[in-house]
Length: 292
Image (cartoon, rainbow, N blue to C red; front, side, top):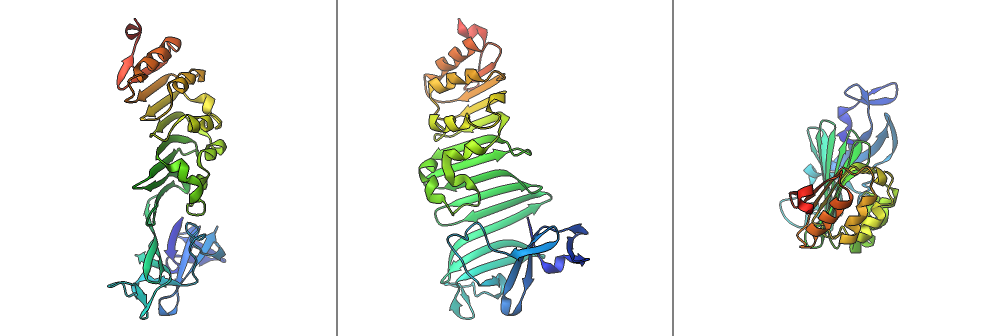
């Protein structure tokens, strides 16, 4: 969603346009003394005042300022000689590229936007949590949460919104419920989030937090039975569950990268009962010769 100064828009018959096309996004207006107002515009019409939905549940302020009016050369960051509590926007050539939230002059949250053609990148940072989102033509294609000390959780989505990649490391699922209200998507529901999703016919499952518990929810997704290509990379999925992928009647490629010593024998056993499937274990193709 584009975030622009109102000066970059034109109006025709009461409809806001950007480069002669109906505008949907956020339009910012510079007011007096460095204050800024943001309006959410949908199909060329203002719908509501802008609020940052990514941290609205844990930080709110009626103060919206242009970063150019702040005293940022020393801490605490100040506005008119007083420590700032409020939201600050930075503009580059008429585009809003950064939003920050300060409390008593201390930076609490930070959001950075980048636009490349039809691709939008958003990075949100707090002390203990980072979020990265990517949209293509308005549709999400990548969602990632991570904390350097505790976890990494990333979802890859195709153009049709189907999940094609899952990365889960560390204690994300133990932390998921505590993230409620802190993330822009409903990922805080943890494993249960997958019950509402659709799965691509080509799926990669990665990371040590990808285990049998997670797999039970993945198997409930729409399209699971249509998987034709599957990759497991450094997961904690058990040998028994690996063998259970025999239920995928359309599976013609199965690639496992796993340091556990017993996994090669598991993949040989899988090949015995799934002879038409291309089976790879740690870059070794399991062929008929291997089975003897």
